[in-house]
Image (cartoon, rainbow, N blue to C red):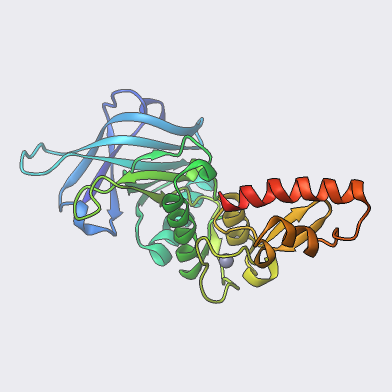
Amino acid sequence: MPHLEFPVAPEEVGTSPTQFDELQPYFLNEEIWEDVTYRVCETLCVLSSKARCSAILRVQLLPEPFDASVKELTAICKVGWGREHAQRVKKEAELCRDKLSHLQVTDEGVTRVSVMEDCGQSLHVPLVECSPTFRYLACGMLVEVHKAGVIHNSFTERNVVVSVINSGPNKGEHVPVLVGFGEATEHQCPLNGNIQANGLRPERSDIMCDEIYYACMDSDFWRPAYIKVLDTEVPIAHATSVESLVQHAGYSNSNEMLKRRALLEARRAFSAHRD
Ligand SMILES: [Zn+2]
């Protein structure tokens, strides 16, 4: 079983710590951890921090005592100090361990630390501006989390990390990894079946689950099911021509002025639809 040495003094996190607590971790994705004691020897980046409450850190882990045959690792540590915050970290870690199995946790006393594999950097642009493949993967990943019985409750760019595939046929490709399960809770997802990337946008009532529905809406996961011509929504199936749009929007027999406006609008909508 690997162990973890974490700085004793919270104020030393972010500097070069000198004294360490030895914590008893249970690591789940065993393939990246060796059966040694890892020491948090340096904080590379404070990803978020609430003074003396909690922090998320990118840290450098070295085997202690030093062992050249053991790979040093960078990892994400989530730390909670004091009963309330420690409990929160523990709950998050247990939820991920039990339901999602990709997060590791260590705990002792009132300092709880969860240690995750370092997957990459958070998204710096809105998800909707990412490539279609990346957006589809991100939403698909959220659906998998729900199917595993967990609602994330904070599906935002901050919690979508960009990871680069290191080997295999897709080497070099960017894929999303969902992190930040601090607000997550158990969830029985009412979504029955799957979501179809680039399919026609379903109704909210077809999806049933708000988190999935709005995540997909916000990231343009679906194609619009309707085209708006002035005040009327026309089902996309009728978007075969500008004239068809005008006709199905009910402006064919309108007065000259209204018909002209509908035609202009339909022309603009039709060319946007074809693009
Ligand atoms: Zn759900």
